[in-house]
Image 1 (tube, helix red, strand yellow):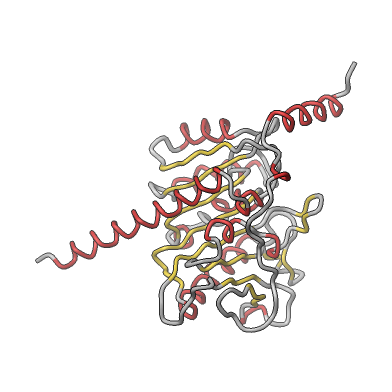
Image 2: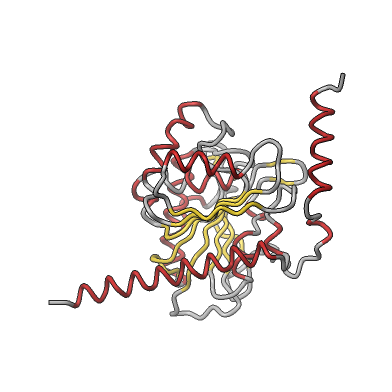
Amino acid sequence: MIRNTTLILLMHLALASSGMDLIKVVPDLTTPSMTTGAPAPGRRVKMVLPMYKGTELYHALYLPIDWEKGKKYPVIVEYSGNKWRNSQGTVDECDLGYGISGGKSVIWICLPFVDKKNGKNAPAWWGDVQATVDYCKQTVKQVCAEYGGDSSRLFIAGFSRGAIACNYIGLHDDEIASLWCGFICHSHYDGVKKWGYKESDRASALIRLKRLGQRPQFISRERSITETITETKKYLEKALPDGNFKFHALPFPDHTDTWVLRDIPERRVIRKWFKQVLKEKGQQDAARDTDKLRP
């Protein structure tokens, strides 16, 4: 009789052979390494909030290659996955924001999960949730004030743990929930399964979801035998039937966010969605401004 672990391995091998082999697709983008020093166009630099000076807490800020002082830019705020296999679970390892923007015309921030007790970035799961939420609010405020981030065009994105964080952190309370015009969730989703939080937290996912309203979410998932995008779709059809969701099943089994660094159809899909959300947001803002001018 085949043991469960062996059966699962065989199923993974069969799954991998039936889909795209992502590793064979040569990347056309390389995510910039994080460096120290002052922010500048085309540089991804290590940043520390004033309140955390003297600790090991930090985030990464990337200014696009076409950045100019005084201009406004959309912002992608991204959270990384857990420490797992070759990943260290750090802000250094984020890729979604860079792959979606191609390094142009979008400010990209990679934020930590805050281990406040030890003054470090938490490599797995949430750290101190309230401190993580506050870190996000403060960083977004700073980037908008000092680097031209457009507060009306903020996106939150994440891979794996970070995908769950789009709602778990991004919809934690009314204030942080109000920041976002769009959400990008790759590989998992808050409330679908009990990933790294208590059952009570899983139940509260429905409360968080109510703060989403009609704002758009791009939800993608690689081919997997443990969790499918169909599960997420069914969950949301029941939990928020009038939600604005774009579901996209990816054809490969790789649990990674590096697919956005490759010129493949899936990247073209998410880039098109991103541009469309920006376009619709601009139209909504223009219509609102017009209404304000009416007597």
